[in-house]
Length: 232
Image (tube, rainbow, N blue to C red; front, side, top):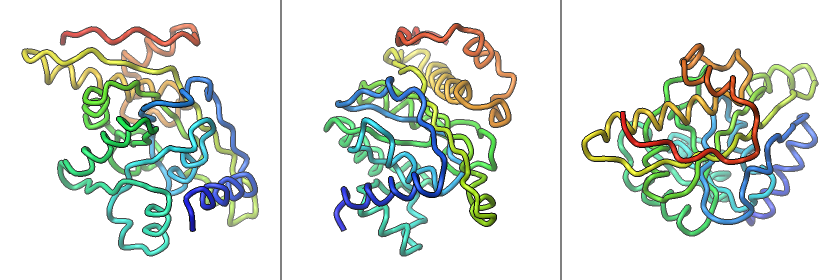
């Protein structure tokens, strides 16, 4: 099966079996490399990203444990996903992801590094490092409702899913003397921006975080924010 055919089938599946809203699609550039950093609660999250408007070229990092499941292995290969070993620093996956971005593709990635139990986990630094290496913006993406899919389908109901995209984030280069502090700052910024486009019940690790509160108190604006300044 061709990738385009699979994409059409997944779009039909999402439209038929769910009630899905995409909010903030205007923030997604229609071409050029970009990172979509998302929370991750369910196996339906990746197929949902696969149907996101404006970027039919999207690929994603997918944990290599799914190579042990024939359907998920076939789906990932057909969709052009990038396998990643989440038990270590997977430099091959990082290189392939960077190459995809530098070739002008959109890349989906879950900074938490694994599926959560419905609430955000502490983010890992890989997303910020990838953005710094490729020089592309990061779009925070909050996916809400996918954790309810199995229960809703068992009761023959359509789950209500919301994919909300926030304004792009850009990051200043790391300074050698403050590298670790900056990288932590950037990772926290990405995760708090994801939390800001999610309902409060999903905030998890970042619930009540001072940076999240600042973001929530800011007036909504379509203008991309300036790069985060350097420094600890």
